[in-house]
Length: 408
Image (cartoon, rainbow, N blue to C red; front, side, top):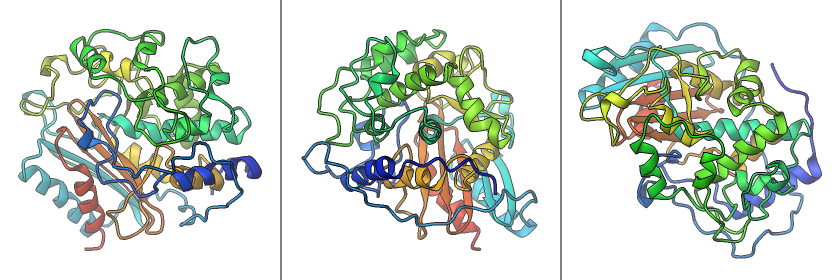
């Protein structure tokens, strides 16, 4: 089994995330998380019960049991033909029901499968399993895992104020700790609708790191008290990553999250790191608020303006690579058991999904013209991904249908 050195900080680390898990509901709504530029209405946000009104409870050592074992080594053989046909039928049925395209990937202990159906390119080009997709807020799982990996190796203290990792950037981080920012309990709200509209309007603009500072609003609540979905909070984590590693965030994703598990078709898009081709592109009637001709501007998906504005929430991947990354995360190849348990127990970039019979972890990604879902079911040894180029598509229902097809 691949794995990192088990660098542990039991007294601080376990206590901190255990306290957070008491204040944050582990069972999210089915909607998933909107991306940094989705601008979805409140109904698209995760419905979370308000935690205790007492801010920043004193950490108390309280180990949280892990509801699963590590996944085994990544299988290298394809799934059998009967299972593959059942999975492909799910994609075909989604397209027959009105989806412009459907691209999926499934990994089980018995093997791997990927498939595609429908159209996702100009001139009626058929979707393919190699097509790259903007995965939106699924990127936050990767960013959270990266921060936890830095914590395992002692480069970040999760209990310290994030301000200590932001250098001289003129940001009011509200005295929030790194862990509070990871759990979206920083007291900093979401990006304004006006800025989102501005980013969508100019697809060719390259937002610099300093440009994106204006997207981080002033704090409006005390850090540590209540969960509030906040894309700017994860931008703070991106700034902190660059400060700690001395690398551009795109490089840090590569070096710490993708290269260690030999993945080269998943990357954080940026001005010097375009999306791999071929691209999954929306077609007429499914493009959202961006003109079809603007997709791919600057070499990124949906375009360089939204990719750079989104900062760390602009990962592009094919379906198979994302499913493999999800498998590797839960196999111990990237994080130790404490970190992995903290992710689900304290809702650090990932959700525990109630709509599956078995323990299931993942999230939805949404961006203009792109809708995606990643789910990992460790006890059943399944990692599954679904992409659809349609913002209104119910990708969680679709990926659940893929998982159900495995049982015949």
